[in-house]
Image 1 (tube, helix red, strand yellow):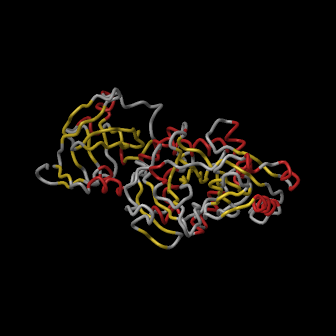
Image 2: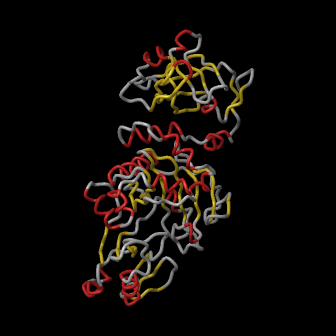
Image 3: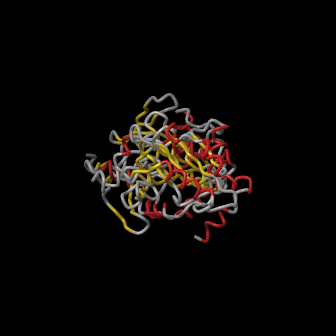
Length: 418
């Protein structure tokens, strides 16, 4: 927790103002055509309540403070009762026009605000979540939290509303957090609130691991673009995922909570240290780096549940070249290495080496800093996307590729391939 202050201090003052105001963030996103829920009304004073006709506001909608946090003051209205000025909220409670006005007044008086002295209330579109993830939640809209540092997404989780959280995706109120493998968008582990590990989701009864998040790469890229647009070095992006519109940014948080570590069963600080100082050209490049660095063994283990694949220590591997054509070679399994390595001549022959499109450079013993490139290959009909070190050393050996431990989860090394 203490280390978090060091990383938040890396954010310039100009960026921090977006974390203090949801409204300022939304205006920035709209100005630059980054997808975000539509704003229907903004209240700056009580007099403006005289001008709103609540019955004309499209349902469902959300009322929230412009400078709140931890879900405080967020009121979700799901539908309107026909021919009456009565609405139904996320707790299935009937709400009158007077109650809507009262809630706005409470926000304007600062009851739910976390920062600043100027309090505003926002009425915005409620996003209907993609059905593939909505079915796991209780009434409300699940969201995705992505931690971004140095334009690289380093950790992510899905937050699922529960009855305890009153249909809100807020962990402080009892929502569920599910870790997500950065490389594949596959869920891993789960925790309810901030204390209770879970293995199954109460509302869909399925295991927390193995759910594929739709629009995953686009979600990561949108989070990075939001960070770059606001000028954040370190922040958390909250996003909704719509079936047709894809990922939409809800807010950018320059001081994100740390419960995401519990959902991923991984420490955040180590990941931040791994990407500090890396050169990132754009959002797409940042996502490529993240997916090469932070692939979880868990997702590979899920695939392996169908049956462990046994390979020899010299398996046949099919490598995709730049034009997606396969080239089959005999590789060497080298469990003494973490990351796989490819011969420089072979990589150039496949058209995979582009000095302007490297993932990063990695220190390799006597060879010095070597390029790391994205490589796609097939091993026992399983597709693997990984970052491989490009080495001149392999030009002089019998093997053009050595497969390291990182790319071997779900495989058993034996004398005979099965």
